[in-house]
Image (tube, rainbow, N blue to C red; front, side, top):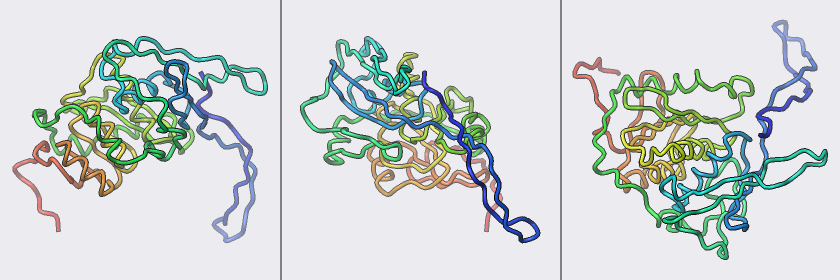
Amino acid sequence: MGRLTSRKRITRLGFGPDGQVFSREKEETMAMEEPLEIRLGHKSFSVTMRTPGHDFDLVAGFLVSEGVIRAADQLTSMRFCAGEDENGQQTFNVVEAGLGAGAVPPDLTMERHVYTSSSCGICGTASIEAVEKSGGYDLSGDTMTVKLDTLLKLPDTLRESQALFSKTGGVHAAGLFTADGELLCLREDVGRHNAVDKVVGWALREGKLPLSGTILQVSGRASFELVQKAWMAGIPVLSAVSAPSSLAVELAERAQLTLAGFSRTSTVNVYTGVHRIVVPTTIDALT
């Protein structure tokens, strides 16, 4: 297991209350970011930049997002491959995954995820159509509903549970909730998409896919790839603290997924699937 954080001595500059410039030396705690190579059949499938920790969840969730697997028994094994840094320490930065019956092995001769940064989950994809072609679970029949006040509480619950963010201020979070607001799983990572993959991977390994009747709350914006990952996992509601992209909204409409953004304590914007949000009969008009 790699370290989640590292410490570095930095210089803090600024102006004090008296207007005088100050310069102070201090130690800063930072979130780790290291590459993780995913191999299938001893061949490289993807390299992603991530925060070490819950790596098997990350690999499992990534394979779900790619349409390679849909059930726990389609992933027969995962193991760390040998690899050492300049100090001779095991890096735990390569995972070999074994696929079982029912899995859809990707064509590793075709260029796909040569490199994935921590800021983007689909960089290197040949086309949007290639990302969408495997589809996801049918969300049209998911009749789950969530009360408005419950939905609005999720960002605060997520933030209060972010241990790594409290130490570093440098990671995203994804949390899986029940319709009643119970937190089922939370994962943090320098990459938004990695945090979601870790949640989905946890669910796969626990035999919980599809994730019908659940809500995925994320700490940042709702991008196209996050909607794609929610759809592939069968999650009917995705809520974000910040804005969705136009493409995320278009995909959510096609997937019949409820997409909410700018969830901020007392207000939320619902872009698609508003029928799943239960609004109180008495509402104070906001002007």
